[in-house]
Image (cartoon, rainbow, N blue to C red; front, side, top):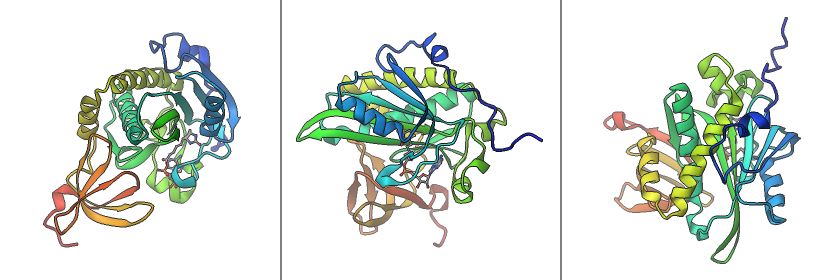
Length: 279
Ligand code: BT5
């Protein structure tokens, strides 16, 4: 009997990504590791020692994949785990925009290639059928008002089986393989994704965030729903009314006050269609 824990996926081949890659900046240099502790940590080290903007670092597996606030990111073989080094001329308070544009690029890549309905979830997730298929970890090196570099780490559950994640994770996660009942071509996926990232990144650095935000909002189902947001300092419950031009989530509290949240975890309390239901 076949070993159920072993994905059939072949290792990622860089020449297959580069062959037809249209992007000129993102992915001009791509480095591949069969294993890394965390591609974000590698990318930060490389950026600090002068690696070029657009450098992409891919690992087949990560032994210490990270989420936000030091949370663990499961990175078994078959996924797409990579980080991109950016050197944007953006003030540090604009960095959340990079996370939003990246989640939009991932969501659009999935819907374009596979015709699957995707959602973006503020601030850093992409969902299919309300389950997490991708998480993004944006880490910045700043000094005062200056952004030295930003590392955008992207984890996509591509060709992984949900049983290769823990039971608890598997309940809230999905993978492209699970949704499509087949394995995907990871090199083609990466190529399309890098091209989309470059497109949105150039748009963003030309100070044209509005159209990106509009597109992002059209894929965000949480807006208009009652949510609970746990940020590092407090828990807020209210109506998610908007995401503003800085990428902050705007919550309307019961007393009508508007609160801006820059980072945190959001969960749905009551969706749009259930407004009149008792809690
Ligand atoms: C994230 O954090 O979603 C950011 C994940 C970024 C991963 C990439 S992979 C390449 C690069 N190198 C790294 O070391 N990291 C980046 P957060 O929103 O904090 O979500 C973390 C939570 O997601 C965990 O606490 C789990 O509940 C859940 N989780 C962990 N692994 C998962 C997976 N493979 N699929 C879905 N959910 C997962």
